[in-house]
Length: 316
Image (cartoon, rainbow, N blue to C red; front, side, top):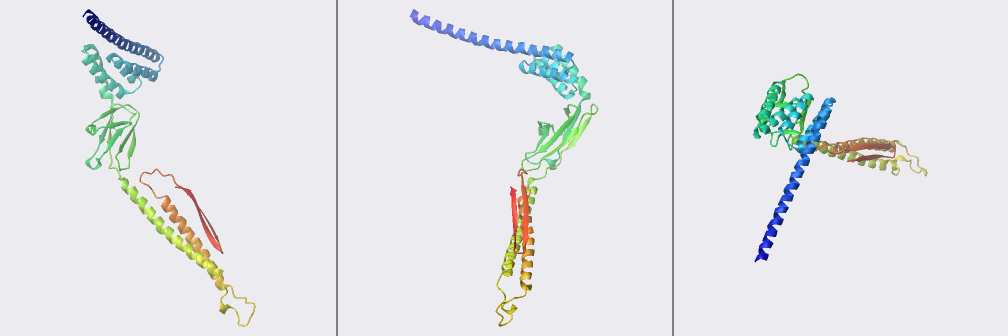
């Protein structure tokens, strides 16, 4: 009985020691992150003193990524403001205010709130107007790399000064994009009217029309080359009986008919080759719906009285 009690006691003791060691390890990791974050903050202050604002903001961002705190967020927001990134500073101050409110830190709440209030009238904003006709299925509106949810359409969105890229896209439609210069002035509002996207089917129909025209033109060209081959054969055929006088052993016929056939062959080869080359070009270079093909084509034609040749080289 005593042996069993000792075993149980030993088990409990071992479990307690294991939990204590895990807790100590976790606390050690937290302390390590806090220490590293403090190092980043000190480096950021040194960079600010040296006038390297953007580099300082990067250090504050690294510190905030390790340990989220209202005080660090306030310093990061101040850094953004010094760098001229007013919208980023405003968002950061809002985040700091919410975090300080959760921690019941009235002083930090007031500091963050004052900065939010001071920045708000100075912000440049973009408003996306998306009419019903533009709201195609699957429409995605983006501001830079960020998707603007439908609930925010028509709402003034604060942006940092500078060039802002706006875009709209949807599956089965051609994407639209534009750039807005929001670098001048303060408190300005830029209204973006999102246009109705063009269906990709229009481009696909153009491609089909090009390919159909290419097939028809190429077929006519092949027929012309075939006619040229017939005329070429006739120009090399035997002498016609009525072209030689009766009883003459050595016949020296006139060359009029052979010359006519030869000329007709040359013209047929030339026209047929040109039409075939045009047809192949139309077919190969027809616009595609995804616009990803990379085509290259070279056409070389050779004509002679005795025949012709069309040479096509390319990648498609």
